[in-house]
Image (cartoon, rainbow, N blue to C red; front, side, top):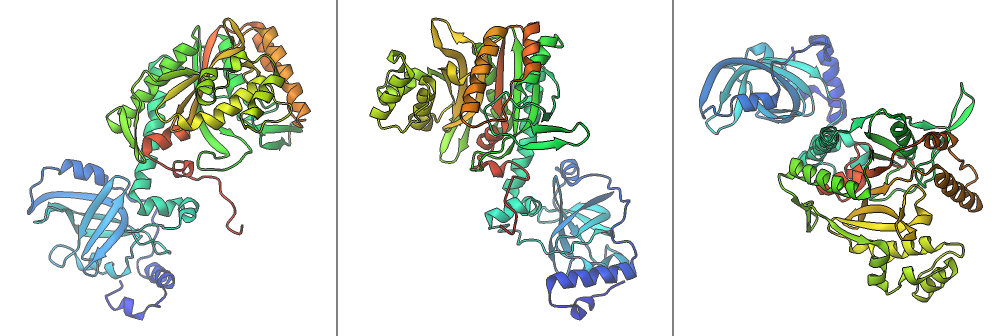
Length: 498
């Protein structure tokens, strides 16, 4: 076994020192990465069990724990080891620790993973501690850890080496623990509300359910070009047609071959659901109840901080029709405008640059995005979208150019999109054909009609409310994250060489 002279004979390069120690350990103890080691409790369990242990008290309890070494003091006499649940101090002294165990201390570096068996005590200073009886090397780390107190200062490196970010940044670690809690909370809420979870395909032969550029791939066996899912909508509606359940949901991964920003990642998570015999107002209530429950689950309150703001997920949320919001912001009364040409002319007079082929509804939606979105800080439902950009929603009674659709906004971000779902098969086909012709005219030659979906709608789909929620953005709000890459464990990024 190595002694305290070992470090004096090693290289001055930190990485080389670790490699030399690994070689010595292999020679002296054999297996440095053992397959079998069983702890008797986690650090969190240990902390909870001995919460009331008084200072300067030593128990007779022998426990076995394991974790990564985060600090070492007095030549290893004191070490802090961390696992996923917390930190425990390890004490190795000649009065309590056999020489064989203490001889391993010079070979242990910050970042190594060790197992320790020993007696539990609390020091005079109140530190829960294990007096080591045996120390087992479980993993020799060959690379130095970043300096713990500063973590990774390079933001891009944090995303590229997320394992180091979480290892050295408690905020980042907590955020991903909260992400897991939020996803579990969504699932529990939906199941408790009577929704059945299903799984739909991620590979589609025809892409649809949203307007987006897909990722394309090829199935060798089927000799078929396919697309990564941009939305699960059309499959979930087919589930409603089947009668499997009246309330269906899926927490799904979607892929859109588009830009990257603080709010956009090509691969993202959505929760999408459909509720038979409900409408978009029922879905608004569902969103408010879901958001409120998640805020309570994470923060213990419906109000929580985001940046320099305080958000409130206490319902009811503000509800405003899109034409009313645009009129209030710009003075343009789109409901008084009759044609596409008049809509484009009114937009240009007001100083908005619109395309020469844009429809009435596209002009309305564009001006809304330009002038209204940025004002929607507290949760708000924007209702009554134009029909010509909403091919899957039912018309608003008395106003055929608008549909029963809403989007939920918070912090000027779109969080959710919902409809009173169109279930008239003839009208659905007409709208999808119209949308397809427009897409082809604008250069989207690969876009096709989903005839299997239309065949299912011909069979008869009950009236329903549908909803899609951008889970990543919702998690950003609930965890006070400024960028979507802060809440996606391994976000899309350029190659290092780029």
